[in-house]
Length: 365
Image (cartoon, rainbow, N blue to C red; front, side):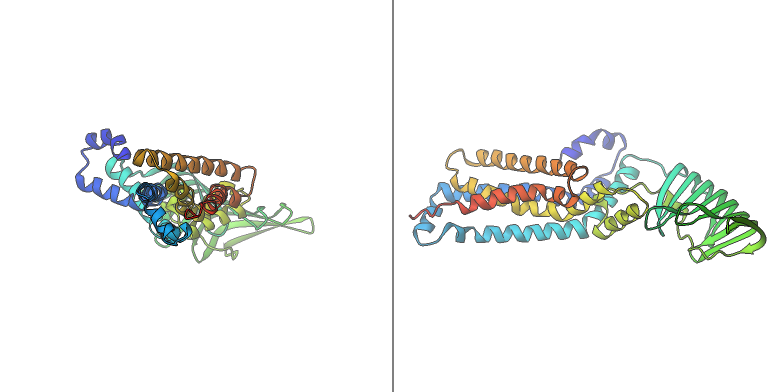
């Protein structure tokens, strides 16, 4: 509802149909479920146990010989089950539906037209390569000033490719005014290739009409060629790959985010923030169980105030969790290990919850 009223102006101005609005918000359901599940479960716990406590039903059960911990077993079981369900939805459904919601918002709500001209596009592709295109036209599939840099495992450059212009067809790329430099492990130029044009697809490269200069025993050797295939891995990227906007962590599943992190790491970048997001994909679904363990002792001791007090307590507990989650993210991106930052709220509140559950008195005594 908050999102709807926040977008009401652009929905009215754009004359967005009810079908589009329904499609947009139905696409957000998995994401909203994962984010709101802890608060919803906590409210249910506060309401249910508070009613049992106010009506002395827990006292009656304990007087009949049941330990309070036995009474709480079904609640804990449901908390574990909902945490696992939340994790499954977060991994299997949220990435796909979040991307769908983003597309609907951009094209059908904000009415943004399809873009054909792109400038200064940076893209991390396959084979530990970084692609840069100064100008790209996706309408006729042409580009100007292309740079491809391939990195080794240590983050040093292995290859540096530059082309003045390029054209893409279904058979691959044709590039013109080529310069290709190959580097040794120490970072020195091992060979330099100049060519009038080249063809490349996912199977490999072919260079035409150029020269190759190699350094052998400290001396340069220059050779001319009509056609050469250096044996470098091919390029599978197409023009549409360079128009992608970097996806948010919730728009990627665990495997996609881990692949993105490995690509950044091999290129010499520090993926600390991405690592925190990766571990949060596992940590956050267990917030449902953690806040439940915090809320149960509050609900069982609460006698006065009814649902409003329980509602306020639930909001306070969730607010503390989100503050700790934000703190853990900041620390995980700078001072501590990412896994510790992602699990910080679960660790702190989970410890407090277990301690408080263990202190629930055996009322019949």
